[in-house]
Image (tube, rainbow, N blue to C red):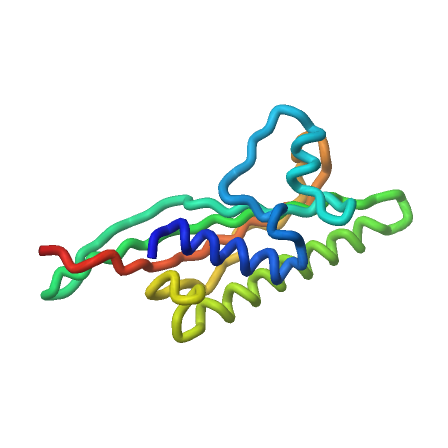
Length: 161
């Protein structure tokens, strides 16, 4: 299956696990000029909470006597969630909600990667996902909880002549 199919399946899994509309799980990194447009792209139910999924890298190799061509894709996932801090200990609550969403995404992707047909058959082998970054950062003048997840997916291309 092409990488677009793999990325679409990953986006679908994230929307389900994080309980957000598919509209805030974006294909690729999002760059917009206006803050209002950015908030619209990443807002769900009045809360700044969105995800981006993109292809970070691909590597290709030929294996075996039949010259099986395999392509290994590194998929990068970034999630963000606005920090809520009104001085009444709400930061911990927004952090807990985001970490729960991240854990749910990791669990959903892990389950799908371990299936007989990983990522709904979109690849030959996948995962498990790795949480590689979890921090707070400023994103367009908004303090956000931010996470990055890496997922490896192996696609069988064809047999080389």
